[in-house]
Image (cartoon, rainbow, N blue to C red):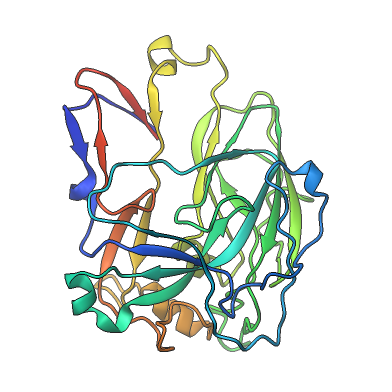
Length: 323
């Protein structure tokens, strides 16, 4: 959380590392994502977003891609915030296709026109980086149905190498909520296999402090691949009225989720590999180009709310709350 006294205008270009803008495309028919049949069962009436009911098949071999929700992230677009959802929420772990646009970037990296990663969507919102912003009030029970629309194969761990594996097994974890790790709350030891689902109920105590937090998957051996690949989002606990100075409570808010896109195959100078290399270590099928090869582009970029170098127009002399 932060408070910012602005200059007449603000551009995020300075915080963005090298690289390009992206086209983001949801791809529900990629072999790592459930097809359009039933994948989970729930009472849709209890969920204001409705539960997308689908079923995973372990024997799917088709590589036909049916894209929904395609949009281009041109350089320096107008700033926008992620959509906001409240309890009850259905989060779908989905496959998403990222494509480089027709530009000098595409000419430079022609072998990497498109590749695949994981991201969160809902029944009314396509998969996106980041996922929707979840807001909750102190004293509220945050109900989330986590649906894993990813598919098999999801190779398990080698007893001799417990590094990256089970890349399509997931769960849900929060950073910042003071809640129990038992039952259907925040346990990182829960595992939702491909095609599975789980209902979470995070009991936020009435005296919980307001704050800016985030959520992501935390399934052991797959957390870095999934969260680092795009499956993450902001989690805001609303401030209790009167708990902040009036000057701060009345500020206009701007939600900013910064996402690192690391497409490097070779290790960086700090010894850290990019997502495609981790995916290959897990023997999984994403972070591959349309030619079936793991992405090998030595580049890193930072996206703000899934945008490349967005421009935020603000009023001189007005205070803003950036979170």
